[in-house]
Amino acid sequence: MSQGTFDNTPPPFFRQGPSALSKLSFFAALAVFLMIADTRLQITQPLRTAFAIVLHPVQRVLLAPVQAWRSGSEYLVGLERALERATEREAAARRQLAAQSERALRVEQLEVENSRLRSLIDLRPGLSVRSQPAQILYEASDPYTRKLIIDRGSTQGVVLASPVINEDGVLGQVTRVYPLSSEVTLLTDKDAAILVLNARSQARSAAFGGLAGLELRFVVVNADVQVGDRLLTTGFDGVYPPGLPVATVALVDRKPDSGFARVALTPAVVPGSVRHVLVLEPIGVQMPPKPDSTPTESTAKGRRGARK
Amino acid sequence: MGRGDDQLLLPVNPWFIWLSLLVALALNLIPLGRLGAMPDFLALVLVFWNLHQPRRVGVGAAFVFGLAMDVNAAALLGQHALAYSLLSYFAVSIHRRLSRFSPAAQAVQILPLWYAAQTVSVLVHMVAGHAFPGWQILLAPVFASLLWPLACALLLAPQRRAPDPDMNRPL
Image (cartoon, rainbow over all chains, first blue to last red):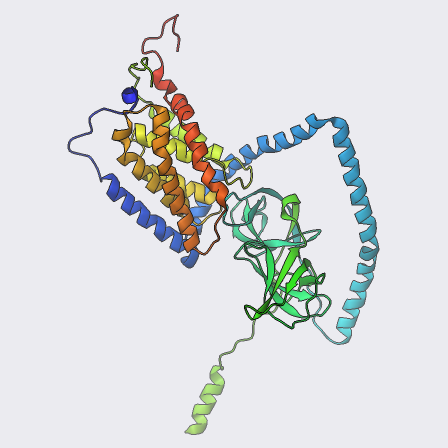
């Protein structure tokens, strides 16, 4: 019988402490309070940071065998096949480089022309964005959200709400910053939204993530949206620089059962294959401050003086 | 169980309890990606110690480990903590009844515990506005129950050593 394995020593008579039920009610109430505080009040960040600092070295240590397994299985599959795949990838990268070099060469000339035209019509010079490379450590295992963890944190200068991109397009935004790592919420997460510009029709709309992937919402039934339209960032939201690819329109359903058309998008970046990303500074940091909308004191005093 | 398990156990070592909990937390932290059917090793070891040593490992320890899991999984702070607190409360409340069964029978009786904790977790998320995470998560408690006899054998092994080791029985 297993009776011997359980702790059968008699409990203390007088100092028994709170009962399990009272402990449960206290901790359940505390957990509910923490959940509410996490979503509404935003005061739980220090607690999260403390846990994250303690857990970060453990996570990095545990990542090593996973990465070693992945590279080891590639090695075991056969050095030749790995070499084949490596040369294939190199050839694809070279082809992409060649295709992009022509546009890259033109970019410099266009930038010079742009700044000259801007100064000609007395516009402020265009915004340039600082960036830093980062590596994706792993995908957060919570099945309810789509988040990635990158290895740059506040000690390396990552700011909350920084956009994260790679060579294919926009990945998402940084939603939590810890000292040594950060969480990036992907565009396909249910809480993610981004302003987009239709490259063909120059119409602005908003793309939201959710269970069905990315979709455009609040699009009228007769809007000018076609399958194959490329959607880019607008540059007006104070976060993303303009012109980055976000998604392509995959499906337009104009049956008006909800009053709006259903536009499904395929994101430009496939999150499963991404390893290295670029973290940008939000462009709102460089924009001039918003104008003050309250009336100044001198005009109020002047009005009072005039009445007297 | 069989006829041969009348062995008197050595008293438990508290360092071993907390070490096993930390190892289970580390196992949970392994970044294998989003596998919904992966069993929760930390919950397994927590329930084990709640049944065997309810005075040393109680609802408070479950709450703190739940917070650690929340931070790791980038989830709402308190989601896992609530589920683990409930899990350990149920485990502590049935620990006397379960002492008379073999590990295999205990595994069957603990299965509803896992499902109750998982239901609470899923309910919290539906209330927070997320979608249903898919039916693979229903497999995770089954795997956890299948691992239960192995966990029993592993975690009780230090207590099953010989009280007076000699050359014939060194451990």
